[in-house]
View (cartoon, protein in one colour):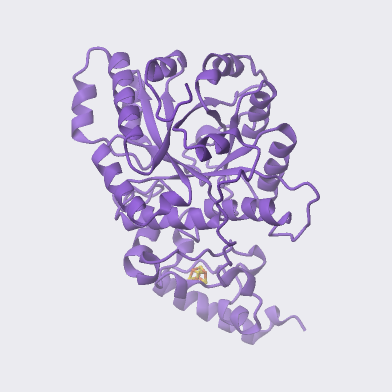
Length: 431
Ligand code: SF4
């Protein structure tokens, strides 16, 4: 007899869905974690994130529905457990259990795998190199690194991207390859990163939970390993805003991505399938954090969770508010999180009026009045943008706990990046 089809089962499942729907906005995931989330349902997060907020939350509001408060801010505010220690890590839901009764799944144990928190792997950051990444080597040698980015082509021609890479490649320690910006198709980041690696550049490929299933993410790791790309940045991904709305995956969140990649690196086994690998990808693992999410406990705890899940380095959201970032870093240093991973400060390079106008529309970014005044009053935005980025770069080198900077160019002229770093003596630079 199929228990799912019995009248008693249907009655329990329907009553549970009705009552929890009224009380908690339940989405009937069938593997309830309310007791771990201060009785706020994480599945009501539009990205379905089960381990913490994305970087798009601003002023405690949701990125996708800015008139609503962020589900995860509510959870953090209500939960003492979330505010202390290392936040737990919960697997992504098993879709086989969707629209079934969580009570009955609990009683028969079928939800165990996805409801009980995962065991973090033992902390293993060592002075020895864990991968073949040159970025890892430089960071562990104590050098202040500077990274930047190029965009994977939207069509099948790498010429333009490679011209940019050749222009800047030897002046930076690594180059991120962005792809699928705003959910728009492009060549994959891993493929474009392989192209950079082929010419000897240190590449960082990027993967977003918005666009990847667990399977396609692991295949990116395998691809990177084969192609000499030793770094990957694991991101949640901005919500797609185009019309018609595309299917956004969110099969896992960025902490679970890190966990999977680290599991593979250290155990030579794919965690979600338990498949053993003879040649396991050993990637230097990056993640992002928005230091300006509020309250401050949110980004600090999220950072701790990402470190525990496996992040080796962080590239932060763009910094426009230096005192705000200093505040965040003070907490990071006090809690010694910077001893577990390397933090690269996100520096914006704003060199056109169009780029400047875009800033307030970037999820998670707030424009402080003094910066607004500075850019509003300038007659030469290119000059001002370069000066601003240079000041930030110098400031970041002297900030406790910061190991490098990541320059984000808002525009297409990569020569600007060379002007930003020109003549700046980078700390610990080998002469
Ligand atoms: S965690 Fe799942 S079962 Fe629990 S309230 Fe949310 S959607 Fe419903």
